[in-house]
Amino acid sequence: MVKSVSVFSNTVGGILIFGVSDNDEMIGLNQVKEDSEFISQKIKERIDPIPQINMYIKQVDGKNILLVEVASGEETPYYYYGDSVMEAYVRLGNESIVADARELKRLVLRDK
Image 1: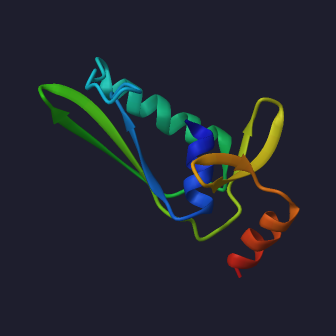
Image 2 (image 1 turned 90 degrees about the vertical axis):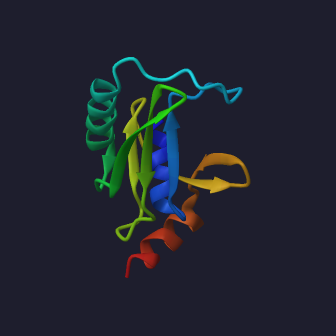
Image 3 (image 1 turned 180 degrees about the horizontal axis):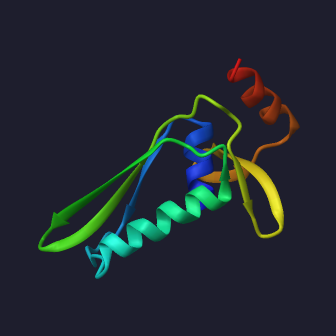
């Protein structure tokens, strides 16, 4: 999840949806407030610089879902710290990949 925030911040932004299963079934979040605080904390701990995000709690079919809107960042690259590494991620097709040296250079220059 946090790697996806790096991807969205380094590219065109995006929205993460929590409370929906992989097969698009609304399962909801039982503790949506606590879940949103946990997600916010992990983003602050593991992404540098801290990206701009907005969180929205919505009810769909009587179940709480959490939308995390990630803006396209202005201070690229946004690095993910975790798994004993520091890496920036970008999107390639439908995959999130580690930015190579060329892509990192582009992200650094984009911030200028």
